[in-house]
Image (tube, rainbow, N blue to C red):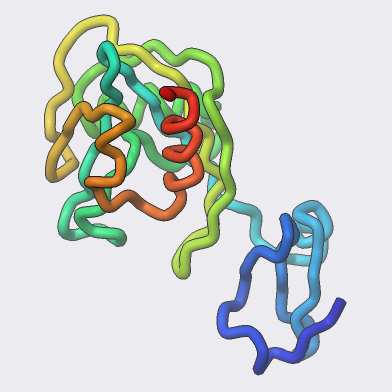
Length: 170
């Protein structure tokens, strides 16, 4: 399928699980694999932690000086070259909240396109065996119940995950 560029304002967006890319002035739809093969950039791999304390889970508020400032998110970050996603999560938790986490199984994976970055977010179940999270990078850290989710402004990539958390907590 080919769409004229004047019908689409963003360079790369999702269209029913496919990526769109400008080719010869037109927008063409590619599967993720074909998009990459045709010269598109791959998504940035991001690992994040779903950390429960009783019936509450941890959320972190992004700092003022970063994109999506003051929005809430799960602790974690971008994978570095040669790093596995569990290794990424352990490193990011040490850097951002000052604790070592025990990484469990995958809770959920989502793809999201922001204006500045396209991410593949893998959310792991995780535990903090010892220590207390510290605000080393984030503006705030809280433990909330699933019923409190709607009281917070979350990063768009997390919204699908939050729906699942609400569903399983009922």
